[in-house]
Length: 263
Image (tube, rainbow, N blue to C red):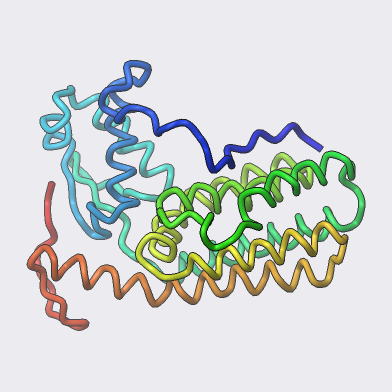
């Protein structure tokens, strides 16, 4: 089983300095990470339009690093480009997210099935499960209420179980899927009410994998991912309407076409 490094401690050191202050980042990195976080946090909404010139001016950089950052966001599936330097935050596409969730379910059920088969070194697997237990099998008073931090821990658990199956290509694919659905997964944990269910379901999955119960592990993982997908489908419209209301946008479900914001 590959060496898996987890950042799962409840007593981690404080978050690093703000992105803009990190001297190790290039200009393009700074633009990329800032815009990506703004998309994940719904400060930039699906359908919002940006221009390379405006981004360059905002970050006090030339158009080259601005373009590089936008191209990286396009590779992540978060932006799409148009002619003459125009860009748009990828609109909400339920079919696309359904496809990605289906991929995620296929990858994760394969991974837990393989872990339960005994193919992974058992001593290393149990060390991994012990580390995950320390985060997820805790009393309610110890549970993390910060949705943003919980998203990081949630992704770490799912990624660790897939990586433990030992298929590097599958692990890389899982990471790409995670990157593309992160914007809607955050809705479930940051703006939804799924924290208690997340802890309980993760604990049940870890117990089933530890016992080597393949059928139950697959069932629990499938139900967990399906529940998250169903919650996100409803939260997406709910959250977008709330954001539109907060910013003075028309919140009518079938409002007539209106100009998009341009940043």
